[in-house]
Image 1 (cartoon, each protein chain N blue to C red):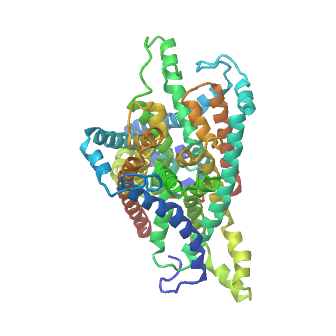
Image 2: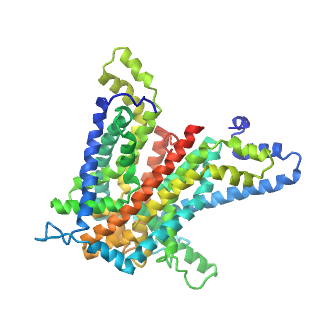
Length: 294
Length: 291
């Protein structure tokens, strides 16, 4: 970090100052440098538009009254939202998705946080390898997790129970909790626990009064991630849902194969709003910076 | 890192057990069963007699169609990775170097928001943009630039665009961490010695961020070859990839053994990628310890 950064919060002015210093003898170099700066910004803004435009289009489409895609939109109406909230199928799917996400969050948080604790403090042999295995559902194809679980349930003849779906979701959300909790545990001052022990606290009391409050932000961040990932989960769900008990993404997927009206847009907006609320909540409670490190 | 490795296992280690049980029952057992199913002639629950067979694998290797499917999958994965790297790098660089906290938070939100929007929703968004009567074609036609809609959907291009949008945040987050760890004074030193910002970037920053490029690319590639919502909806079963084929074998043909064999092929490709990814991440953290 340059010392000038402390005084100039914006990157542009910092760079400007640096380049002016550097290029003081050769004035000709100043022009292209500024030009390069604009190109850099223009490219990045174009990329941001690419990332965010599809979401904006969905919102526009959800509010547009025509039953087909029309651009530019002809008006604003809430008819697709009415249709979505009046639809028995969509409402049932929304409720079921929330139910599964809730169960998943609870189980993934409890299992993931305790696993992270064991990995960081248990002096387990091969802890590094266990971490790799526990994070692997993030990278291994979720379609295989879904397919393999589906085959297992068929072979064991257990049908397609809700607990089976929750188990599949727990498997793919657990890595998030393990990762965020481990991140907090690694930045943890062990002397705090030692101090509590030296002052006469039992191991259990030390855990509940010192360790747990300190790792809470990581666990909470992991739990919120688990909730969103489960709520949006599709590849595992597609194999494990039963007709009549479908999650919202599966219902949307089946609807999309035949219909492309604004109801999908409205359903999408509802889940986007939910995601945004959670991201903002995440930023307010634990701060995004702390755990989006890989 | 925090504790000496010589310490003995303690009671806290027991907390790993519930997760181990979960992985054993709902991950390793099912994957193992899938491997078994891939070499059986039928479903042992339904069929009275099943025998060992390699015919599912022979079918994949012998029929050029299936090799073509695997090649399409890898090609789409590779294209997605390259495009995601090309558009992910500038954004990651900006995020890593931006000084203002608010600016950083806004960028992070812009990257995370699509990531936290479901895959089905984002694919739907691309359908509204790319279809024959979609936003892009309607706009181009009304501007008089084209008379016939461009075939953006039901093509490999459409699938790649959709996949890039879904996986570019993973690339950005991986790269931001790595670029952020590169000492900015190295670039400044190069510029003070007379290098242009572009040259300083190409000769200093870019080589130092190679491990991140590798890790991010492997991650995106692994995710892209296992995607199937986007290829199904944007490709409309006209472009076959391995995951789409697996889904089709289950939903339409109910050929569990063949689906399992295809699954094992996909798993093996992914395992290689996961191992390579962890190696690449090891390089990144090795670099961190050096600094």
